[in-house]
Image (cartoon, rainbow, N blue to C red; front, side, top):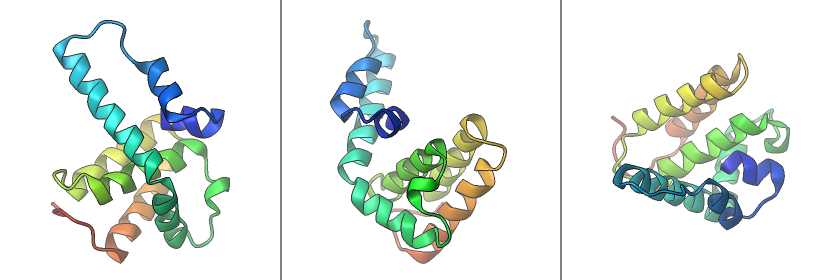
Amino acid sequence: MLYQSDVGGAEGEQVLAEFQPTEYTGEAERAFSYARSLVEGTLSHRQEIDDLIRQQAEHWRLERMPPVDRNILRLAVYEFLYQTDVPKLVILDEAIELAKEFGSEQSGRFVNGLLDGILKRHSFPGTLT
């Protein structure tokens, strides 16, 4: 959803509506509700998130990063900042796995390096474990 909003220029609500399940079961409703909170949160704090990524990515312009990597980074940084109940290392690991699955051959290492640097450089609410 973040990728589609970023690349396609769609507003958050428009993208969310496209992905909203047609039939709600308890599990689908919980999953979509959680995804919605992540997407809305990431989009509403995008400037702050992008600033943190830019500070860490010394030789990379955010706009030149592959869109998949850029949006995985945004999601992870949002979680670092605002999902205080999720351990930071879990967020890091999940972001790396997403990058390996959906990005290029180098995406996992790239995302790992940037997020690890952000974690070392900033203090975030919540636990690191």
